[in-house]
Amino acid sequence: MSLLSNKPQHNIIPILALLCGATIWGLVWYPYRLLEQAGIRGEISTSITYFVALLIGLVIFHKSVRPALIFNGQAHLLFCMCFFAGWANIAYILGILVGEIMRVLLLFYLAPLWTIFFSWLLLNEKLSKYGYFVIALSLTGAATMLWQPDHDFPLPSSSGDWLGLLGGIMFALVNVLVRKDQLHSIEIKSMAICLGATLVGLGCTLVMGSSLPVAHMTSNSWLLLLGVGLAMFMMSMVLQYGLTHVPANQAIVILLFELFVAAIAAYFLVNEAMSPQEWLGGMMIISASLFSTKMNHH
Image 1 (cartoon, rainbow, N blue to C red):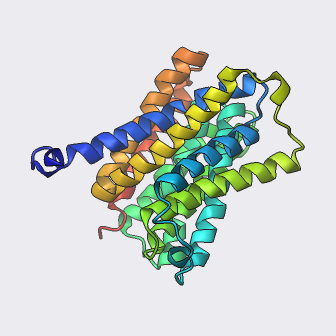
Image 2: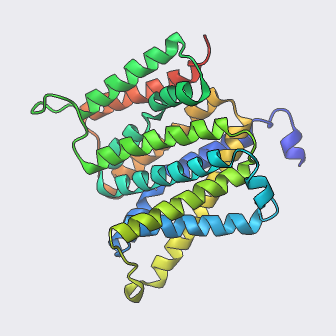
């Protein structure tokens, strides 16, 4: 433990944890695409991978996840977190399967904009002058990305765009609920998020009539599902650890590393490149994320 107590290195471990989490999140779309190519639909792979993450968590944290600790007066917040986290994850994963990676990710990164609204609604947090600036910059960035000469109004043009947008709204709501819920441990909140993604994925699977092609599945597909499940568990842990030990304004800057990783990976793995117009809109959205850190500083 001496490494953690050394002053010069004290902040480096949480920062490395955040960078590690951002890298996993920036690359995770690729195994999900491979699974889809193997005939495993996005909603099924989401459900299975998060179920794997949930099982790993329950084995490791079985002492921290007890009914008495869950039903403690704020259980309703935990259930809301579970439900909306499920939708955020399924929207994100289905979005990156059907849309262009960077467009979906950047629309997902409008989350600070929705956070302003949910913080006001659920936490009574008032906007500073930066808050209005973030709203304007986020919306301008999104409009720049989505604008097409043949359309009057810059709305998302594909299901991938809409899913990225929906995922970001749900993600913002979950973040505000995590902040509002002060009575549950990080372990319980992490397990709630994994459970939500498992259940919502399962619900979508049933509604869409998808099935797991067990007969045609190779050992590689099973290993990939287990590997992604393990990565999802690790990511939730390193991100929770990093977010606990790094100030929010520093954390958002570090987590934007995910976009950098995803842009390089999308270019080299699936030959997707962004247009100058998308880059410009994306830069505005990233800038809004950076400025959002000053929202509560009057």
